[in-house]
Length: 368
Ligand code: NAD
Image 1 (cartoon, rainbow, N blue to C red):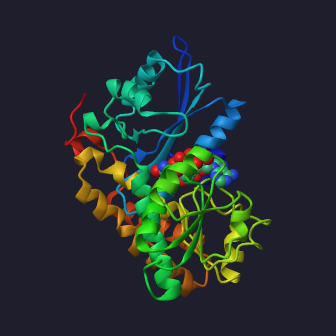
Image 2 (image 1 turned 90 degrees about the horizontal axis):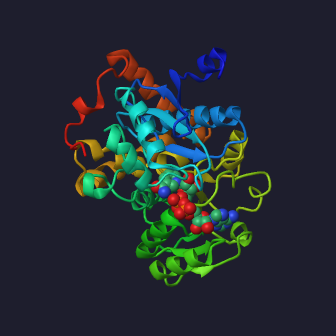
């Protein structure tokens, strides 16, 4: 169990353990903050080596969701869940239905979705038992694949950074080194190609590189370590976290860092170093929030127009964060946290905690 001292320090409201020996369910839900609305965040399934490791993961991830929703202007709080188990061996209909029943008992304070090792099929079982789940299949009113929306948001972040650095929002003619040709990278590559940017790409997966080339026929493929040495304008990390670290930061010869990967800075001090080097860093947890934004409108009845309107706000919010960073002479990551925290603080003072059931607020979606 996490200590109360730790929960006080990080600001978590609630941590719940679900246990059902009949189907070997061991799940932990962490609700970090519900000032802005019900806590939304995916469920991750992982064979953790210890319960302590699972607790650390769920506490860290749920807090991150609070900041992401807050800075993105969503009326959602932050939460996350982990299921301790081997995704290859331990999945069953019973496990996910049991999990869904437990979630229902939370009365909408936490809404789940897919995360690492949890797919739409698993979520469908959860949805049999509770409406408090997002990312359900399109046939049930769900919002489909989030990756193209995440890519759209990242592209808006790149445009904001280009406007700040070059005085022109278009990355036309700019050299972009894109790390990771996966679900998001592929769509981001397409946006960049359509706008006339020059794309260098790397990936460990040949198949994904081939799919990437279908969208970006003139992309130049480089090695996975070579990517840091490309003579580039923009570095777009779309694979792993912590790629801005002591080893890479000296090699990055660019003006902008903007990509989809979570936690790009190995440590906060790397954000300070980027600023000192005159490299503009677009805040990762804001510009990669397009997928979350897209899923958030599932409850009120998803439409493409709504998704576009919402995801495109990332441009203005990114510009605002650059302004705060400049005015206060602080790194971008710090300016992003300030904006998220100030929104939560101001709304806390007007309406208190979210108390109602999600179904009353979002009547648009039908129960399965
Ligand atoms: P993905 O698994 O589809 O793609 C990741 C790609 O990176 C894969 O093609 C993989 O082969 C490649 N890769 C792995 N290690 C690499 C390395 N060392 N060098 C180069 N390439 C490597 O994942 P995704 O959904 O495209 O997400 C990409 C990143 O964006 C992840 O960090 C993810 O957490 C983050 N993100 C994704 C979404 C989303 O909507 N999918 C939303 C927010 C954040």
